[in-house]
Image (cartoon, rainbow, N blue to C red; front, side, top):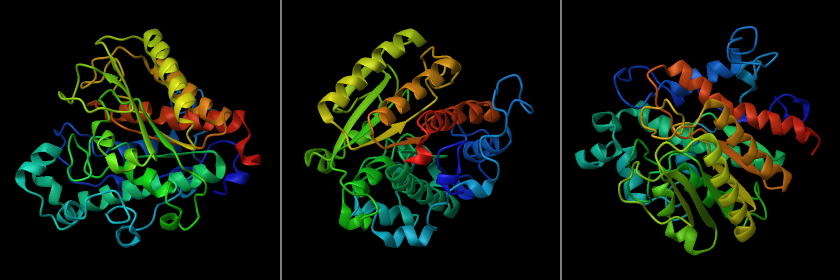
Amino acid sequence: LDPYLNRFHAPIVNHERYSFPGWPETHTFPMDKFERLAHALTTNCKASQPEWSTLPRPLVRSSLDFFQPLDFHDVISSGWIQQPTGPIDASYFHEFLSGQLSEEDARIIGFREHVSRPELIERTVLEVAGTVLAVQLAFRYGVASNVAGGTHHARPDAGAGYTILNDLAVAANYATDEKLNGGSVEGVKRVLVVDCDVHQGDGTAHFEDLGGSGRLFTLSMHCESNYPLRKAKSTYDVGLPDGCNDEEYMIALRDIVRKAFKDVKPDLVLYDAGVDVYEGDKLGRLNISENGIRQRDRWVLDQCVTKGIPVVAVVGGGYDRDVDALARRHAIVHEECAYVWRKHKLWES
């Protein structure tokens, strides 16, 4: 759907193979949440879900209205991901693609024997490509979102915490290298990651080459007692106490984001809208309501758009045995992208 003709929602990137069948139902990581999220975006509204939705119609009218990233093999050959042009260690990347990661690597990632499954390899690469496409769209239209992404524990040469390739680092590198992006993104010198997942974005903080060159700045607001036990050093870190509520959360968020915007003066923001801050999330430890999540997302996105900073939203973490409820929670950030899209009439930009 041409964004200039769309007055209801901002561009949203999705791929049907973000999820795949045959994933263990008992696994902590809900691999089908991406499929459920896409379904929620195309079906849920006040008529179908009156107990939680106020939308007069589904946010996305048809699955054909999603933007789709490049196919797997095109992404591999693009040079976006692996060194020397991308930020990911080439040896690690090729070991992952060929299913040759060690058992210890797979254990730390958390997917163990599933790491070598072709479906997982493909969806991991597609997820990164989706965030790159969202960067292209946000640069052109002001705001865009990915139905996946936020793989912030992955480092240049290793994965961890259910993340394998760091899409945020790849997207930041892509946005700031006009030779690599072919001029599809121009004038972006400084990228700020605003990471509001409940777990620290430790992997993103380890991309020293990007940070050392003044291209990548990382802001992580997380639960201090939560994973990872050993924290990395982000450009800005806010470790919240267990049980932090909506009001306390928003005070901390406003303070640190305003400081980061003033200091960094970013040309692009990558926003990790993890919903594992939710009070009922099984890996969370904070006490944030769904309304608090919506307030958070709206504030961050509106701050970016008001300041004329292109912003990309990715879904980040979220863990719930009720995957449909989790998908509705992840839908909030896409709804809030639509809110700022309509508020600022970005289709006219």
